[in-house]
Length: 320
View 1 (cartoon, helix red, strand yellow):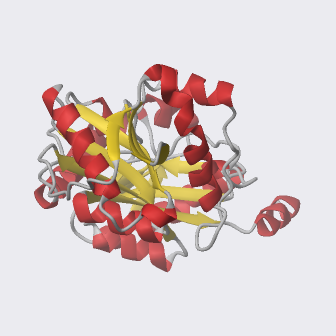
View 2 (cartoon, rainbow, N blue to C red):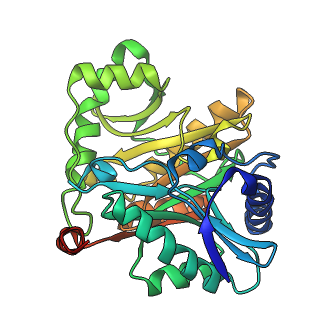
């Protein structure tokens, strides 16, 4: 096996592998939409951070990434690098071995670019690739999941009032959004999210065309679900797709079916507007979130992450 720099000459073969891998995952997750194009490979060619694996003239796989970025996951001071869905792939045979050799070469490039946080998006049912990255010190962090617009079984929750939040009232949910961010500081999250001020919250609300459904109890909003024209995988651009970007329920109102009812209301509204699929992404180390989302959505990718010892990076640089 030969590992070489990824180049423009390999894009056609890389796209073929990417689409084959995607179709493999679609067999496990039928709600995934059909696609006929992979992500744009131009950035991967230009940044020279990718590699390709060959056996003779046959491409076995490729591993590319976006450019390095500061503050990985918006909760660390590390420079991050990420290989998104479709930016990596391998043929079926010996897939773990192919990824092992590709990461060894790509990881060297990523370290030289100053990235201490390495993240790779792998298909949820590609157990061989995931096992190899686990052997290399990666752990799961993020999950993307999807469902069709069939409504779920949800109890009436007669003690609550449910409705879609009007644009002029959207600031009423800001306190709950910040409470959600505060939860991320606790165990097992250990994530910091900067609280949103009114101006930044409204700017984000308008930019993403957010939709809020809320539950009210005793005149107070106690839970919400938010959907947006967003997402972190290339299927976000397919017709009829919308993405859940947040949900929260005050602790004393959990276990009463409130979140399920909110999800059902969202599904009903979107279905009447012609949407056919609903996506969500969440942290795998969110105990309650993972349980809720995976009950109603099918996972189709896992992002695995490794944090490199910055001290080792500085020592390498001094020795080179």
